[in-house]
Length: 525
Image (cartoon, rainbow, N blue to C red):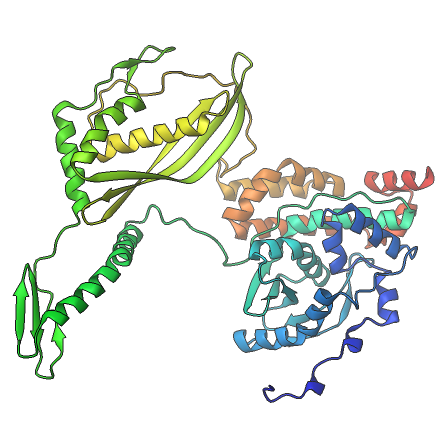
């Protein structure tokens, strides 16, 4: 079957193979696909690439690799589909470029979107691949190509199997690109010196533009709409079956039927409708919750247990179970727990013992066994344990406090806790949020430091020292993050006498300390 195109218009497999000139040209520089290998984490692939660049081994022949050839063959379709879907034209297909600052860096474009000033990259991957995995796999190539062309944006156009297409827009990330340049520079130095390279760890990939996840747990509007959706989903089939059954009971000569709060009318055309002005029934889960609360308010749950370390009174989870179980049965209510999120960290106690901290976010579905109506409550639970009981303790804590609040069980002023208290050794955490002085002032302070740096090594130390706040800044204030990146780039340009190839840098007697180390490695084998 054909759709207006002759088979002759499709590229032949022979035409997709790289020419000998192209293969030789790739050996003279680090390209975008090479960046994927350099930060890919595979020592075997990295050593093969190193031997190919040194021309000790022929480039791998991929003409028999069906996945690679299929990606090349569908690139034209991918490009046309992108243009049709987005309305953006793609140019410069197959053009090769060299970096102005580092002549040993190059790239060959799949295409360029002139309207956005963005690099365009086409990929064809498995239908079972996840989007975040694809982004992480090709992020080095995208950031490399943007760095070579000094572009601020890139499009990754992906065909998943034979039924799904997605396009991701990625912003240029100066922190990621600086670490990528460092890894590529070390690799190219190994190519020039003959020293086998070592695989470098990949930096965290930046997130694509306008592709993020949000939690609407705190939105009342979302909660109301979600409750309606859940209720409708559960009762939709029952409602449809009931309407069908009631219509079947109405004989042809009946114009109006009513009873048990439901009214049906027949129109002049003969159709039967249910006006809906009958009394609506309230979901019985709320009556059940109210019934349990009414029983608990009479006696409550006393604090009959004593904390072993601090001596205060509290209610144990068994006390809650024992008191609550018969009331749930009497009011035809069941509570179904489920874990939404769980986090574990290891700590050391004051006595030197190993303790595991577990934090769970749990949801509890309160379900009426009479009509199936559901009300959901959520709670957090935390626990410390020296063995494998941390999760169960945390779930017990989440359950207990969810029940205390849902059924309004009175709590006295005595602090409530588990029957043991552990003391932790203070530790410094690597997590970072907004600095005390605010992001604007923090960025201004870093700019002042950058402006007085007298070497590229000093700039590298600034980046390494402030890595955690820089990553947090990239997530929370991308405008300030990119402004700071431009400041660093401008300072690097001021400190650079000229863009010198690595092989010349290795021979330069006044090379920076990192380059001198590379030179010593060459001299001493």
